[in-house]
Image 1 (cartoon, each protein chain N blue to C red):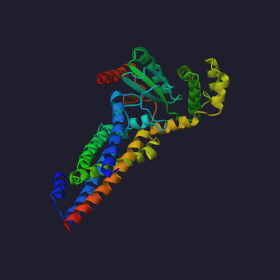
Image 2: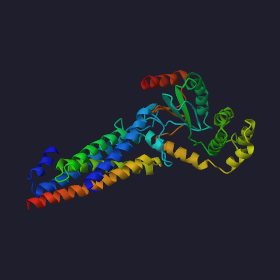
Image 3: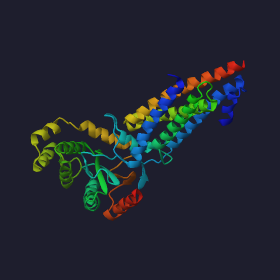
Image 4: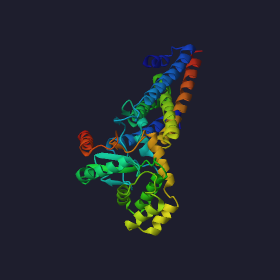
Amino acid sequence: MGKQGRRPASGKPGNRGNKHLLWFGIATGLVLAVGMIALSLSGPRQSGAGSASVSNDASGTERTAKGDPNAPVIITMYSDFQCPYCAQAAEMLKQVEKDYIAKGKVYLIYRHFAFIGKESVEAAEAAECAADQGKFWAYHDKLFANQAGENKGAFRPERLKKFAQDLKLDMKAFNACFDSHKYRNQIEAEREQAKGIGVQTTPTFLVNGQMVLGAYPYQQFRQIIEDQLARAQ
Amino acid sequence: MSVARALVGLSAMGVAVSGYLTWHRITNTQLWCAGFGSCDLVNASRYAKLAGIPVAYLGLGMYLTLLALSLWAAARAQEPPLAATLGIFVLSMSGFLFSLYLTGIELFVLHAVCAWCVASFLIITAIFALAAVNLAQQAKVTARGEG
């Protein structure tokens, strides 16, 4: 570029040179763009088993999150309330809460990936209605504690309302929220967006961008957190 | 306002937008999403990196280079160096096409739009349009001068 660039300043190039220059510019721009797009499309896909690296996930204060938003490690959990492995993972995360979240080292974000069926979506809607009253996590625990098969009535509307009652939520507000399907669109959109970043199954975790699939035992999961903590320092 | 100055202004705006996204990446703070869109989701997707490098960094590098080149061209407004005009054209063309691709990904794959990415797309589109006009004009002027 430098050589060609200097030419006109000295007033040497002819018509043909200028035309060539235009085409040279267009061709170089095209090659660069096509190269970058090809590189982008061939980037890592988050499918298959194990863990793959993706970019950092979102931070910030969220309704369905716990811990310090400025913690060095951010864990996003994509989960379905009907999925038994998610219940296992939620149990394991209680240990994470004690050792890392409470100490300001981990910020945990819960994201709905309600894909098992109608009761998954309704349970997620109910949990969001509980979040309206600041009780997301209590409702979350209640749901996982009451799992009983998939789409077999464990999370039918009456039961979901009963859970809210047990947690002493304002039932008028909860029912209004739940019956109007206030959060249905959001939950559907959350699932589609998660698919967009490569989530296919539950539970899926993003640990500072590292994708981790499945319910790991605490010791293994702890190691992943420790690795990310070491990297963050 | 001359085209050269407009290019300087637009490049500076690009530096501001991509600089903010870069700062967000480095400090891992919450993105202010200007009230619409899903910036965090877009920036968490696999498309937010190119060969392991965050796209925000690449954008900042591109806008800084564009700013330097357009300042160079503006300083010699009477006879802008062809290297600068050509450089701005090539960079903005590839930037525009890549942005177009990323916008397509946002709309049709992620179904989420990031306000900052849209802002950057508009800026690079304007730069590319001006750069194309500039290069075509300069080529014509040089050709006429010799004819």
